[in-house]
Amino acid sequence: MPLVTTAQLLQAAAAGGYAVGAFNCNNMEIVQAIITAAEAENAPVILQASQGAIKYAGLDFIAALAKTAIGRTRVPVALHLDHGTSFEQVVRCVAAGFSSVMIDGSRLPFAENVALTKQVVSVARAVGISVEAELGRIGGTEDNISVAEAEAFFTDPDEAARFVAETGVDALAVAIGTAHGRYKGEPRLDFERLSQIAAKVKIPLVMHGSSGVPADAVREAIRRGIRKVNIDTDIRQAFTEKVRAVLAAAPDEIDPRKILGPAREAAVEIIREKIRIFGSANRANAV
Ligand code: G3H
Ligand code: 13P
Ligand code: ZN
Image (cartoon, rainbow, N blue to C red):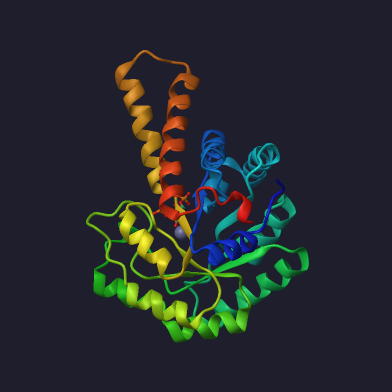
């Protein structure tokens, strides 16, 4: 199966009423775990590289790892830039063979976010890749802001409709109560707001910061219009806990393969579990 765009994956997800998992990767083991899990569940999947991943591994390494894995698989996969920071970075990802980008102008005033996103959409259209944008602000759990403060940054449904009409993006990341990283308590999602956005915005919606969101809440968000679910922290946690367990059981172990191999398997398991929650298992042929 060739590399596909996120738009292709999310259109099929909208038609089928499920969501596609977008999993962050930083290294070979996690790239392999994502593809292995997608194959085991016969699911479409999105491999995404964050700013941290690009800094850590290098854009060329991430792209080469992803393309090698994608070239060998039969499930449809999109290669996506997560939280892209600039037009220039998007162009670098296009050159590296990405099929999808996010441009995150959520920190900018509305008009500037629209202008930056439109610029990215114009280049993406020219080369046939997809664009995700963000409106409202999805912070980090470590920001320590109160619920009331966070709500001030939630996505406004009318603004979302205007943003999508003005920019022509393929997917929109919305702020509805999730945050990046590990939650201290249980996150409370504003489902009513999500439904209001979905009623006004006819493109697929994206949920960031989805690690640690209870499965029932994720399913409810999908019922209300979420079509792409971003997961990073839960993979990091499963991977690192296994590294700790292996080293605790065998403190003298020095072979990285014997430490990272089991961690890769733990990542496969958590990703498979997420794919089943998202309803995208056995949907590889729907694309
Ligand atoms: O955007 C959320 C990701 O978890 C980014 O994390 O930049 O540390 O890789 P990272
Ligand atoms: P988590 O790390 O909270 O799963 O968030 C991932 C994400 O939204 C990547 O863009
Ligand atoms: Zn995110």
